Amino acid sequence: ETGVTQSPTHLIKTRGQQVTLRCSSQSGHNTVSWYQQALGQGPQFIFQYYREEENGRGNFPPRFSGLQFPNYSSELNVNALELDDSALYLCASSLRSVSSPLHFGNGTRLTVT
Amino acid sequence: TQLLEQSPQFLSIQEGENLTVYCNSSSVFSSLQWYRQEPGEGPVLLVTVVTGGEVKKLKRLTFQFGDARKDSSLHITAAQTGDTGLYLCAGEKAGGSNYKLTFGKGTLLTVNP
Image 1 (cartoon, chains in turn yellow, brown):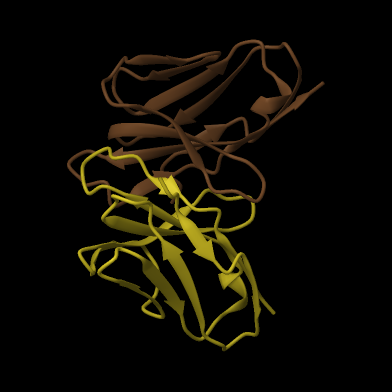
Image 2: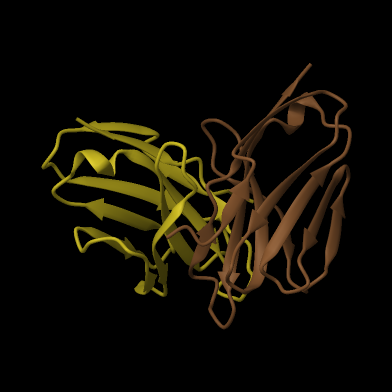
C-alpha cells in the first residue's frame, strides 16, 4: 500500500510569483484535502476535491486553486504569492464518508521571500 | 476564530510521568480525531471518537470524548521519549461530511529521558 506523497518537499519563492504543489493520494482513496499549517498553528482547511471537483472550501482567497486528476492525484496552485503564504502545505487523502480518517503526506514547506 | 482550544500549549515532562492534554470547544462535533505530528512529517491519526462519553484506549494512551461532544482529553500513562511530538485534536461538525476538519493549535509534548 502506497502512502500519500507530496512534491516538492521544500520550495522557496519570491513575493508575486506562482507555485504548484503536487500530491499523490493513497491507493484506494478517492478524496483529497489540502491544509495550510503556519508555524506554531494547527492545520487550516483550504479545500477538498472529490471526483475531480471542488467539494468544499475553507476561508482562503481565490488565488488558491486546485485540481484533481482521474487517478485521484491533486495539485494546489497559489498565485500572486504573499509573505504570509509561507507555511507547510499538507495534502491528505481519504474515502468520501463521514468520519473517514485522513492520511496525510509529509507536506511541502513553502517559503516566500 | 479558533473553535478548538487545546491546553496546555507546551508540556515538558520526565520519562515515566503521567500527563493529560485537553481539547475544548463551545461547538458540538459529530466526531473528534486525535493526531500526532513529528517534526518534518504530516499528522498521523491516533484515534477517532464518535459517541458522547466514549473512552478509547491505545496502549498507554486513553482518549475520552465529553458527554456533550464538545470536548475531549488524552491521557498518557508512563510517558516515553517516543511520545514526544505535537498532539492535535480535530473536530468534524455535526451534519457535515468529512470535507472539513477543524484543528486546534496543538499541544507540543517533550518527554525527557
